[in-house]
Length: 203
Image 1: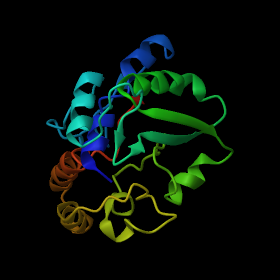
Image 2: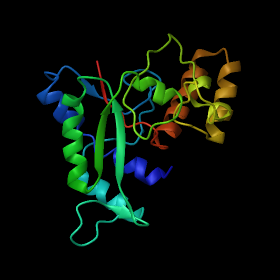
Image 3: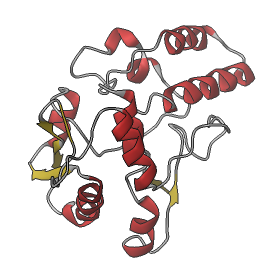
Image 4: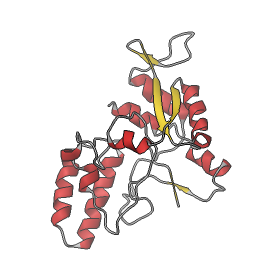
């Protein structure tokens, strides 16, 4: 629930290294909910691997490593997170486990049959996944605050931002395509700065 912790995580996933070592350099790192499209806002914050910056942000958020301790802690709580993954995804996320360990975060990879159920029911801490898209962005279900606390909705991260709500409501009533594009770009700009998603790789 701490935006600074979410922001720190955006600097802790080495997507470029994964692309080089596992994906034959076939993908590109994204920085948008609508990457490489006319809907992407050009001034979105860039997400890149920088563990030193991430650790500084975590320290400012109160997560610090006590002398002689391996893990970050705050209010006597160790920074330990379970991440539900599908069988075979450990090859992708074992490097993340090591990178997080380097800054003092213990990440446990838990293999389960239906990790999406954890996501859609909002019983997760970190989730890896992706969405298919429609020809025109349909944003209300995934970002409007009226779905922020519901389960079994595509707003599974609990996005709730009043300006996004207003833009979605205008967008749903607007027929001019150029104006709609500008609205989605603005939504993209606001949403990326909430750091609900650490963006991955795209074709």
